[in-house]
Length: 238
Image (cartoon, rainbow, N blue to C red; front, side, top):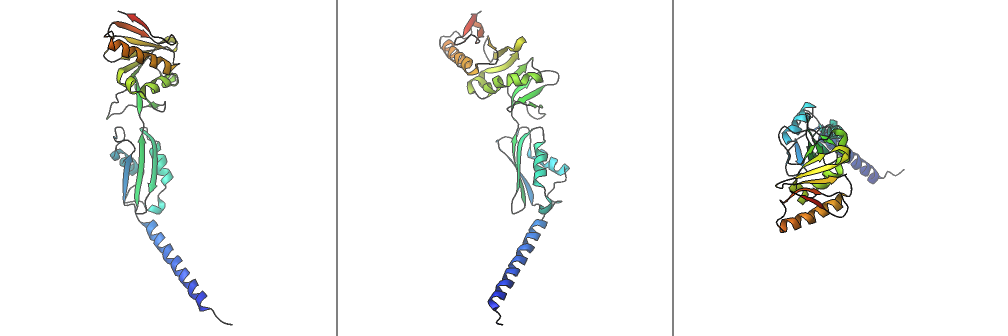
C-alpha cells in the first residue's frame, strides 16, 4: 500500500494551524479589559457624565482590572446602563484590542411639571426626574399631574420641535376641561389654545398673526389671543 505523504503533511499543517488559532483565541479571551470608553451621541453630557457611567460599572463589578474579556456579559452591561434614570438608550460593544465602548443617548426633557414633586416630561412622553447638576430651559407645565401628560404631550412635543415656538413660549397651563393656555416671553398677552387638537393649524394662524401685529407695532395692545375658533385668530384688546 502506497502512503501519500502529501495528505499526511497537509493534515499535520491543518492541525498546527487549528492549535495555534485556539491558543491565540484562548489568550485573547483571558486578557483583561484594557479600558472603558464612554461616548455620548449628543455633544454635551448634561445629565449623565462619563464619571457617573464609570462609577455605575465599578459598583457592579465591571472594572478594567478585574474582568476578563471571555467572562464579560455585554447584554448585562447594556441592560445595566439602560436602567439608569437619565439614559434613554445605551449600546455596548467590545473591540479586538480589549476596549469596552459604550454609546449613550441621554433622555431629553421638553417640559418641566411644577408642583411639590416637580419632574420633567421627556421627548418620549415619559416622566423624567430633575437633575441635580443641570436645569433644562424648557416651558414650565402648570396645573398638570402625571395622568395629564398623555393628553398634553402632543402640544408640548410640537412646541419643542418648532424653533419659533421654543423661543417664545415659556409656560403651558392646563385649565379645567382639558383646555390649555400658553404664556409668551416679552409680551403682555396670553394665548388661549383650547383643546389639544388642530395643533398645526392653530400655530400657523398664530404665527401669521404675530408677524402682522409685530410689523404694525400692535403686539403689545392685546391682552388675550384666542386660537380655538377655526381658521382665525380672535384678539381681545386691553
